Length: 484
Ligand code: NAD
Figure 1 (cartoon, rainbow, N blue to C red):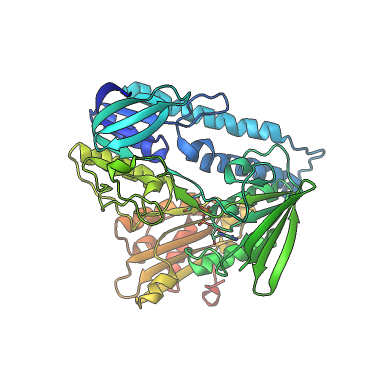
Figure 2 (figure 1 turned 120 degrees about the vertical axis):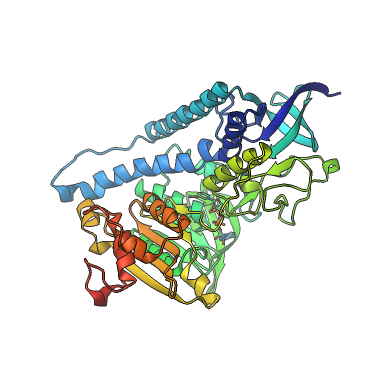
């Protein structure tokens, strides 16, 4: 029998970026808030931050940072006339640094929760109706019920299982295990050359693994502007990644501490033998066990929660945000904005999200970032566009930094000059894209960017040069060489 517990204004289920931000904003707005999250760290303690902080993006960028330093010391530092000998790798220490970052950031969220008086519950939560949530402690002791006028579902997503490659987290591993390895595998296969597959490939190839990516689709990074994805393919291949497109994995077999992967492409069936195989074939919403059947929470055929444009589910007072819905892509900052949006709606403030101007970033080396529409999407609808590109080989600062790979591309409407999309591949693309996001939020024209003074020499002036290129007046590149 469930016992009854206190009443809250808002209950948030999940403490990933969408959930913890939503709880903080609710509390800021004076709402009595509880946040329930079931993540446990290796000490079996609660660790706020969800997959994003505990086993995803933050781990990935922390390890990439270490891998870049290792790669620099091994392959690039000599160009500076600096000679380093006896470089060695301590993966244990590298993982400890990453884990310390996670611990620190999670503790910071806990401090903010405490400051705002948010009730934090370490348990599994299940919606039992539009006003009540059942909480089951992780030691499986008796469940209890808490109530609220509003419930925000923010339970996130998890890796999709591939029946042909069952994860054992020893030889066939998921992305979480791939961010916690205790040694560098000699040869590693990755199923899926999507965002996660590529980010993991960037880390482990820099640490010395031979990487083979098997991607079922012929089209590489199909949602990215195709000029950028072609450039990415060229750069990654040049760096040594073995990317096999149109390669669908059909079976796997483990023997003698190795995995044999069978895959099919246009030329027939092939076998590949690797020390470890990472499955990075997509993510699914965590809706299993999130609500009882009696609640009648409506999901779509892929188990995403059905919501309207205000993140409202079919149950009154119940909202769903972040990776649980198909409103926008599975991105931490999309979840964060939805968390704020829903909290404010509950408090009576309505400030809708502009999903059209949402930046995307792939944290590889070099990074890829974009906002707005791609050239192929605009051409498909017959939009009258003009394009300016600026290769980083023409950027002074990129040369000085020793990372001149990449380009900036700006697409504007041919008649109005309004910026419709900005696409970047290159060092610091994740930071550079912020200028483009702001410009588009303010409905800037490419001429606005072209007339904005950028410091010289900086990498950010490549955006300025790409804007000038739209009108064939780029300054640091001969006019005939605009398209690399
Ligand atoms: P994804 O959908 O981006 O890529 C998975 C790839 O696996 C696809 O290209 C698919 O064709 C391929 N695939 C599936 N089955 C296969 C098979 N049998 N053989 C070969 N290839 C196969 O998914 P992901 O990389 O797992 O990422 C999941 C989500 O998480 C994405 O929405 C992504 O945007 C998000 N994410 C974002 C970031 C970021 O913002 N930097 C980081 C991590 C994840």
